[in-house]
Image (cartoon, rainbow, N blue to C red; front, side):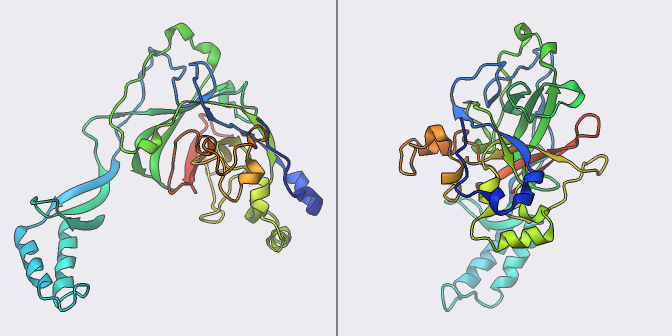
Length: 345
């Protein structure tokens, strides 16, 4: 697949950007049958059968029901009947709500009941799983298919997996990501795991649909806040949306990260505290209303906004992270083992 030329020549307006160009590989995932040795999203991995399939036994974030003493609810109901207006609390009612919150504890999310059942409090927080959760295959990327894929220690194959539950992490609440770097020649395809184990899934949006990839290398330019102050100021005054023109949405490897929710944040290596580079973007969509014309592939220009197949092109993997956002993996190019951190926008 091929990205159309930008509607506006950014380099003609700001030629100093040319020296800051960085290549990225748009993956262009599209639903289809995938092979175990292919680069793809979802689907089977080139995973040695003799190697245990990874599991997660870290605490999962979730809702816990907490019993509330019946006498506390009875007192609350008495006060509710004393309301003069349905939406205005009676004297003392707020104090009882605060008492219920103290009973439920940290992570309080409210209380309620179902049918004739007891009223319970709802608490959002970490829960220890009863048994380890098998990870879900997210992506398999071959260096031969993805020009911008790093090759730490000579690796030419990256396998990305995650736990399909929410986890409280340093920079996000979301799936816990793990990376596995391999040399494909070391794997005997005849001894590959036929069927990975499956387990409980908390969020169906973390189960990627199998997608074939159509990699395309492009050139991106930095997020405006990474630029010199005078250039950033001129871009702010420009009549066009700079980031929409120079930073590709969708699944990609390499390039620059966009910081549309938090503004620019540091991404230090978790081990050496040195700089990291953008490894992978896992996006909820390949384009939106603002980037539709700029980044929709040439081969799919006939897929208009009203076309019945538009969502297949716009959201091919079925993955949704955050509130229709993107999960980004930053990797340290200097440390052995390629330590990484994850961020969500």
